[in-house]
Amino acid sequence: MFLRYARWVTDKFILVMLGLFPLYVGVGLHAYTSVTASKFHFFTIATCVWLAVIAVLLILGLIRGERYSVRPRPAHFCIALFLLIGAISAAFSEYGDVCLIGADRYDGYLITVMYGAIFFGVSFLAVPRRRYVWALAVSSTVCCGIAMLQLGGLDPFQLYPEGLNYYDKYEAMNAPFLGTIGNAGLVAAYLCLAAPMLTVFSVLSDKSADTWLLLPGALALGVLMLCDIDAGILAIAACAVVTVPMVIRRRRAARIAAGISGGLTLAGLGVLYFWPGTSGTLWELSQVLHGNLSDEFGSHRGQIWKQSWQLFLEKPWLGGGPGTNSERLDIRWSRYIEALGRDRVVVVGNTHNVFLGYLVSIGLFGALAYVLGAVCSLVTWFRRRREGALFPALGSAFLCYMVQEFFGIGLCLTTPMLWVVWALLESPEEIREG
Image (cartoon, rainbow, N blue to C red; front, side, top):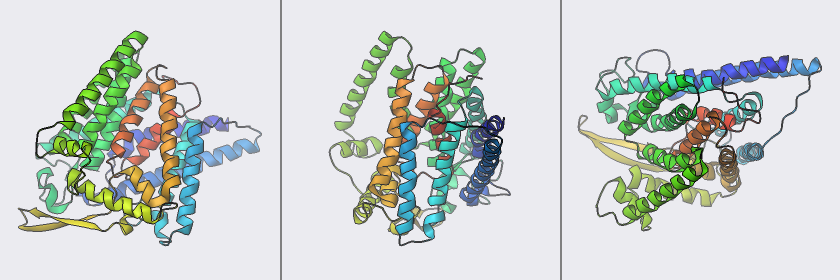
């Protein structure tokens, strides 16, 4: 009985994290100025309340004689190792208490523990359900609707600093902000979850009502393109190339689609390698294929990655400690803002690559545990890719998000949703379409 109640509470927690969490920007006007703190507090309160309630319920169940059994998958062992190494890194870090919350981005060990709690709690107590996809559809539609108004120069909810809008993006902030997420790069990360999940589920579901999910899926994809975040666009393209052959039901057609996808990939790489331009994203990718990584490539990612790699080599085994990357990175550059009539200094506090970030913060083995956990889940997705509509949708969303993480900043504004989706992908029970 108490286990059933714990499952019910977990179900509601998932709905909150996929349906309400993306929309919360804080209380009061000009919410973008504190959106990271607002989402961190929402996430922390929701997660701690959920954990406390299910802990009480499960303990009461044990007292009443209930017995629980779980069957961990390989990904569970990898994430357990990831959390253990993170704890050891924090314990031996010279930065002390900074490792708990993080220097300034709420990315310390405590929030990592909450991510791990979501992974284990949701994967053991929940099963994928159709309503989770609809919850994500609602939140992404609202977020994208607000973003479309902002791209039109409006600010109906006064989210920007007073007197500014989207096109004043560098006057008060270091990046463009959109929707109910904030930083446009994180909006793209969120839509990398929403667009594939909604699209794949709407196509594969046998319920006619789910066809309507194509509309919010298309809206999410459209806003992602308008955000003009190269990482998100690349992730969507890579997801499409991999996902389409995997979700086709007929084996012969799937093989043909796989051949076409492989051919298009090779052709695309060939075009990039011989790209004739002298500037722009495609030219930068072409130069990378030739082994040339300039500091300015990818909004200075070349410079950031080079210094991050050096920081990793300084402390390869345990890193500097969770949440300390902004303390160790020493990169800044200036951007001239015409409206201000002066340069604006940009200070970098993130590796702009989640995997590289873990190498720097918790070392080689912690980063490997995280990557191996993701690989295990992708293998599980491949093996169960033709089971219903929910599992292929979850796997495509997970893959898309992981691709963009190679260029992403991995903050608590979107990362909790990744862990919810990841946990559902590892649910050991039968999938339910209800």
